[in-house]
Structure formats: C-alpha cells, structure tokens
Length: 327
Ligand code: UT7
Image (cartoon, protein in one colour):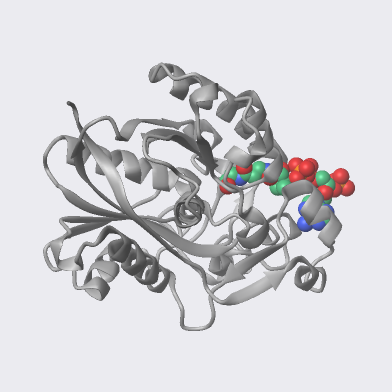
C-alpha cells in the first residue's frame, strides 16, 4: 500500500461582522441585483477593529485540531496560505504557532493568492509522503477587507475575510491525497495584484495617495482565463488518476464567482448538489475559500469514506491548482 497524506480534521472561522449587498449600495454605485447576477454573492464577513489574520487562523486551527484529536504541541509543521498576513514579516504562521503553543513546529507562510490553499496542500502532502513530517497544520486565511478600496465597485463587492484549516498526517491504504497539480502564468501577473507596499513600490505618501496598496483586478479578462483554464484543469486532474467524471462525489471549488463554478461543474457533467457553494454567504475569501467550504461539507456529513473529492482554484499570479482526494 502506498504512503499517502490524509486530512484528519477540518475547522473554519468567520468574523462576526456581516456586510450585505444593500450596505454596499450606500458606499458605491452598485446594486444587490448586479452583484447577485454577476457573482452570486449576497453577503461577506469582515474583521472588526483589532482583529487580524492570525486571530482568524487561531480559531480555525483550534477547531481543526479538535476535530483531528490532536494537540498543538504534537504539530511538526504549520503552513499558512495567505496574501493578507498580519504583516510582511514575520510570517503569520509564526504568530499562529505562538498562539497555539505549537512549540515543536516549524512555521512559514505561502502566497499563491487564491490558489494558496491547494499549493499548501501539495507542500504538506510531499513533506508527509517523503517522511519529513507526519503531523502538519495547513491554514488558508485572509483579511482581504484591509486591502480593499471601498470606493472601487469593481473589487470591494467581491471579497471577504475568513480562515479554514486542516490537519494532515500519513496513512497507508486507498484513501488520502491522490494527486496535486500546480500551475502559474506570471505573464498575466497584473490581472490581479496589490502593486504597492512591496520592494517595487515601497509605501510612501504618493503610493498611498494613488491607492497602490489596494487589490486591483482586471475582472472580465480574469474571468475568461479562469473559465477556460479550470475546464482543462479538472479534466486533466481526473485523467491523471484514471477517474471518470461520474466517479466524482464532490467538487469543492474556489469561491470567486458562481458563473465560473457552474461552468466548471458543467464541464464535469456534475449536478450542483455535488458542488460545494457558499460564496453567497462569504464572498471571495481567496486562499480561505476552499478550506472553509471543505469544513462545511465535512461538518454537514456530505462526504463518505472513499468518496472522490476534487478541489480546484484560480487566482492571482496568475495561478491555478487542483487536488484529487479519496476521502
Ligand atoms: O479569486 C481570484 C480570481 N478572481 C476571479 O476569478 C474573478 C473573475 N472575474 C469575475 O468574477 C467577473 O469578471 C466580475 C464579477 C469581477 C465582473 O463581472 P463581469 O460580468 O466580467 O463585468 P465587467 O467587469 O465586464 O463589467 C460590466 C459592467 C461595466 O460597466 P460598463 O462598462 O459595461 O458600463 C462595469 O463598470 O458592470 C460594471 N460594474 C458594476 N456595476 C455595478 C463593475 N462592477 C460593478 C458593480 N456594480 N459592483
């Protein structure tokens, strides 16, 4: 039997504060009708004053550890996938490690934007399969609200805050992570970016005045690339594992746009009952969207042992990624 990695616990955490589409109508020239029709989003959660990314990570991680029946002190590695960490340095993973009291764990952040959770899953999977680590915590967490221009209707209606976490360990048998697939096209880096605040444009009065520290997105161009790319990705992922679309029990997609999700489901001939959708409640939480959706699916008992589950994401980089799991 091959050595594989397996998710043995999931958890998620959403901040309390809710912003409805009707609240946004008061901020920018938009409407509940436009947002619902074009994206599927009805509301999103945002952090309150004093709340940050590591706080969301901590709550989601505690829940995942509890579900796994594991103590934080037993963890060997903590990975936080985020593009909106507490600060550029140190890693949010280190702040989380301290918060959890995970004294024996190494910790680092990983940034592959909205694909970050699946990139992290691939890293964790390979560390476990290679025998380096056996108890890994992977978190996808974002506080996008602090990087949004609340005057830009093209972006502020889309994103939300939240965190999802999984605990992984090794297993021998049929179940576990079957494969992960990572891709990027850096030529299209400026389709989604936060241009300011880094080494290219360090923060100055000018960069702040120009709003370079906010998320910028060429939405329609990104949409077209996403639909085309994801349709190929999901088919390639099934082929790599010799699995037919009809053998798929559940698709857990990144929650950016309902139209992108339904296009991918259609390509797989998958009825929407087999697709995890929660973006109406949380909007696009970037690298947190898949682990939050996974946690909801697990807690709703929608997954059975040996079910084939596909995760897929697309986002800034551009990056896109998938994973096939036998639950
Ligand atoms: O998670 C990372 C990956 N991200 C994605 O995959 C996101 C991909 N993109 C999308 O989801 C969609 O492109 C959006 C939801 C961002 C936009 O939808 P769209 O159907 O592509 O709209 P559009 O950008 O082509 O804009 C159509 C119109 C424009 O007006 P004109 O030029 O036709 O007069 C926009 O100015 O809609 C306007 N518009 C809005 N109107 C009301 C753009 N944002 C808004 C808004 N409310 N919030």
